[in-house]
Structure formats: structure tokens, C-alpha cells
Length: 255
Ligand SMILES: Nc1ncnc2c1ncn2[C@@H]1O[C@H](COP(=O)(O)OP(=O)(O)O)[C@@H](O)[C@H]1O
Ligand SMILES: [Mg+2]
Image (cartoon, rainbow, N blue to C red; front, side, top):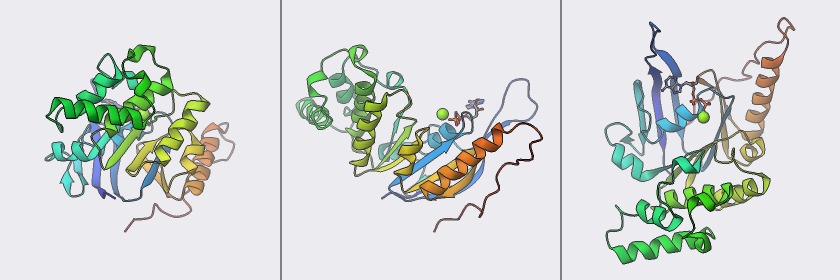
């Protein structure tokens, strides 16, 4: 398993018309070593920002993020080779007209020989049950098929870590189940954000993000319980006496 370390990493951006930068993520120190890690939290809480830090799509404004000691800013190529990123909407990721071409495109750097590249692309598509759809326009695939294809295109180059930003949000129940099983069968380290709390319960460790910071970090059932309490407190009528739930214990520092 890879070790991803955030060392006092924070993300702030300048916003027009605001004197002070906006904080997208407060200073965070985390050590991510488990095979299956989830990130849950409300819309706008900072989940995507946190995930994007992990492969250098977003650079920390202060502090550092490293993947097996490779810095995501100074060694972004090494990091990207190790950490694959799957976006919520596969259409923002799939750039070629067909699945076959897209997977071949992923392999263009790592496999120079054209015939070998075709062979590997075909093997990857086959592994995900997508071979029959390989030459169909990506616009004529279902949402679930497209999401699997985006996953296949990223996994074709065999990254050590797979980061997925809300991969099941656009999927129906059947495709969600298919995605869940596919992810469960992967040997890679998987880090994903999700609103699917059932999926979160299947993981090894879950972080709850709220208002640009990690407010809970621990076992899935406890994290989901915390998140539910947080949402319930947020919905309480003003003055109902409910406060934001306190952490029963501070976010544990992982070894
Ligand atoms: N480049 C940016 N400039 C300004 N604000 C941003 C930028 N990217 C994200 N944000 C804001 O930061 C907050 C966290 O965003 P994000 O990480 O996408 O949250 P989530 O994925 O949990 O919905 C949101 O309020 C979002 O609007
Ligand atoms: Mg997001």
C-alpha cells in the first residue's frame, strides 16, 4: 500500500472582491495508509479539494502532500503515475470518441509499441466486461458503462492508488452496485468521496469533512453516525438548543 502524507497542508485561493483569501481546506495533517478510505461531507465542505490534493490537481498553499515521499508539487509526474484520478462525470474525463481509443490514449506513454498498446487496451476493456462496447461512441453508452470505462482508462496504466470523486453520484442503483463490486475487487489503494453512506460503511476508514476541515476520522460506522448527527444538528430550527455535535475524541493522529 502507498503512504500518502499531508503535513499541515492547507488550500486557500484569492477571490475577486475579497480582501482575504478564501480557505478551501484548513491546515490538515493526515497519514493515509489503509486500502479503502472514504471522504464524506456536505456539498461544498471541501471533499473534492482534499481529493485533488492527493495527485497534485490542487497544490497546497502551505504545507506539503507526499505520495510515498514524492512531493505532489515538485514531483508531480511521479505522483500522477502512482495516483489515478476518476472524476464524478466520466464525460469530463473521456476525451476520445470510443472506449478503445480512450484506453489506448491512457497507455500512450507507458506502452510505446502500437500493437502492444492495442493488446493491452483490449485486455483492460475485457477485464471490465466492456469489450463488446469498445467501438461504440461514448455518447451511446449508459452512465454506468461510461463510469466503468473512465475507471478502466485510469486503471489501464496500473496506478498504485485510485482516487475517485463521488463516482456513484450519477449512477442508478444497479450501476452503483456494479461499481461497488468492481471497487471491492481492486488490489489498488482506493480513496473516494461519496454521498452513498452504504458504500462508505464498506470501507476501512472514513473522514468526515465539514466547513473546510476534517471533523471526524475513524471507523466507518462511527464516521457515518457522526455525519448524520452533524446534518441533523445543521437542520435543527434556530434556537432549538442543538449544537454542532462535538467530537467524542479529537481526530486521532494515525501512526
Ligand atoms: N477554485 C476555487 N475558487 C474559489 N472557490 C472554490 C474553488 N474551488 C472550490 N471552491 C469552493 O470551495 C468549497 C469547497 O469545494 P469542494 O472541495 O468542491 O467541495 P465538495 O467537493 O465537498 O462539494 C466550495 O465552497 C467551493 O465553492
Ligand atoms: Mg465535490
